[in-house]
Image (tube, rainbow, N blue to C red):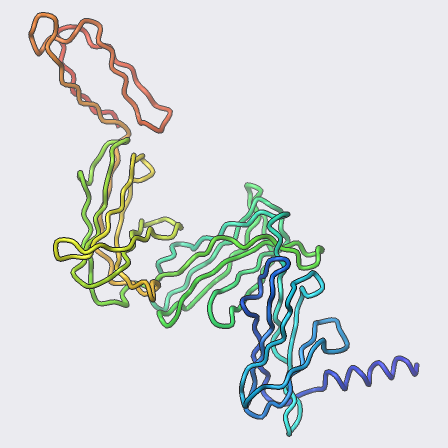
Length: 367
């Protein structure tokens, strides 16, 4: 009984009920860190804060305390070598002349290990190009049976969100994170990782980044054209040319109905315009669709111009045009006897063999 009372009194002295505004807590360089890499937990409160304390959930005592160098300065609780014991949820609070603050929101430190778990895939639904004030869903998905997924946002304070995974009908595991409203005020770049609930904060390597792009922020409207033309045969080489007269160093090419991030190229100044050539070689039926392009600055690539007019690219499955050479008799309309022509999409399973008899001409299109 006496031991229990002593423990409660110690807990109250370390974690007193506070009434002052709670501090902000975040991790630098981020809350998702590879094994063995350094990380620091940062806290920042009001001008009156004299001392900060940080503790891990489930512990009865703080594991560190720091005094700010100047009023309202942030404090850093350094962890020079990240290990499993540092993973988990952490909170901080501060002491001022008038009392204790409320405890901060929880910060979850996640330890990743690419040697064990493969990184999941992250995509934006319906598209990473989002109108200002709009909403988007970020889908983190993996074939590995993770219990939950963690989404992190790059930039100041690097917040994170955690959702339990759901198994799809095809056996994949995913989590859907609603994001928004999206504004052009700052960058919207995200990564995600998969974790197992009963393996202490052990998570996968982070996914490749997905950056949300906000169109209509910059005043110019680029133009988009295609060579050799908007209707091509499978296997041909196609170039989409994006141009703008405004001085922009980045140009994007976006395809409607795809979750894939737009292609991005540095512009070149030529013929009094800033331009970029997006090559597709060779094209297949999968390249068909509606395209638009945007301009931007490399310093703030998430802010896009107005979109170009839509360009519809149509790819036929196969196009065959045969012009006969002079035959043995010297007659250009008479092909060599038994000439065989094989046609088909260069990267598809369909092929068709035609036998041309002497005296016949051939001009056909297979779609």
